[in-house]
Image (cartoon, rainbow, N blue to C red; front, side, top):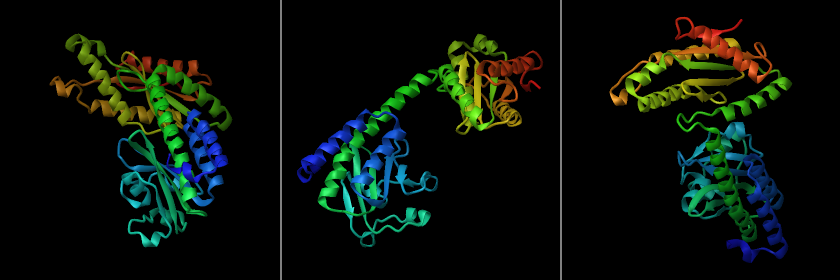
Length: 339
């Protein structure tokens, strides 16, 4: 490693111990706070920030910061080559800037948002294998010596491994919680999440609701167009559900042509409105169009809410299910609730 020649045995030992801690931690929130917490102790500075590279957009995004309000900066995107952090990620080399006024690529947007004043910066890349996964940036460090940079780079090597470990762990966890056909969450995740939501709501009295939905006359689609086209139709309905939701709401493949939508913070009336929105979106969507089949799909919806309808998981799902079957037993293609 680059920095070993500049560190004492005691400092190397401390870094090694920290490295072991980082590479064994799989909870990203604990991991990232540990990284920045230790660095702020070892190299005092006004601000420490961890930015990770978004694999989809290729931009850097703030993942955690010490002394910056994450609500102010969470939506900021920094392109490769933009600002000092972007330059470090692009060139894959550490950078010390003693005076930001003397550089042409200083990016002052964060200063304008936060009201802070940046005079100097020390920044290092996080590299795993041959890929940049992010950067660690310190604003106005008390020391900008080669020794301080060596220390930062030493820890960055371990931090890069730790970041990649947590990403792989999260991908594995996501696969375990997802339905293979639709990409929506599965029932295992549904029951786990509802258990947590019930516990949280008992303390906060925060409401939540869910929608039970079942496609109408779907067997006719399968009989007319085959199981493969039926599976694709299920996938396209799942996409319709996803398009109508914003986090923290989520959709679940409940089995076959049944779905559940979980709506944290929703009352029953809001949940009914959301169900109507999904129903309307389905009614205006042509399915299997890429196959030249062009079919319409409809669904029956049932809504239930905590704590109005139930105070346990089984009862809540049962109420929503009963409301849905009341619609299905009538004209179908509607939204119902039990009052």
